[in-house]
Image (cartoon, rainbow, N blue to C red; front, side, top):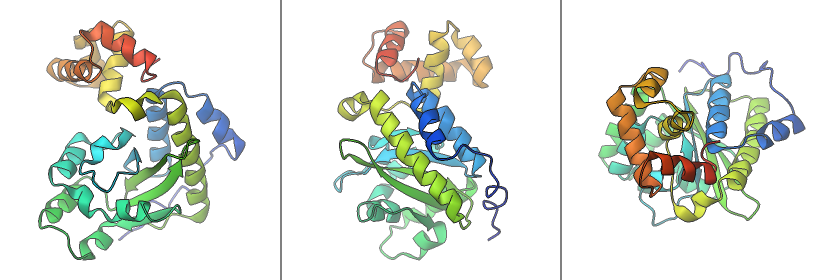
Length: 251
């Protein structure tokens, strides 16, 4: 398969060493980190990212362990509906190692013991341009283990890029723990779209205006806002915004 990832990233003009730490330390909300990770994902030619805690062995839904992600909702929902977590090569290796590694779709396809439904999910990944996942194991100051997962085209990641990404992963995961410690205890996870809709609501925008800004229908915006209001156990959108600010989801 053509290496579409390596081209252009060996000369990426990114801050080095401590500059990463200072830039990430300045991020104030989960939404800030989502925007930062979207930029990193694009710079290194990946398609999407997911940051999660290491799922417990008896856990069957990846979404329950996910902290933030811009992974298409249909992919994550299908992953959970097919119980793919039980057969995840990447998650199994995350439980066994603290070193970065990568898993390709070819690796996964060749593994034995997968259910027939795995083929359906693998086909969806291919349709979304995801042929490989790069895993960066991390832990926070309290010893909680997690991972930053970057997904995209199949390619050999240069050593310099891998080192940059491992350092970014460590700082991002710890920053998430600092500004959003509530997610560990509450179990509340907000999607990127939910955070975006809340942020624009906090800025005084109507559903119609948010729809125009995000390129969504007004119905879809209302769906996100109603859903996130329930997630935050709020009585209305105004209270949802207040709770989201207190929890560090938005500024």
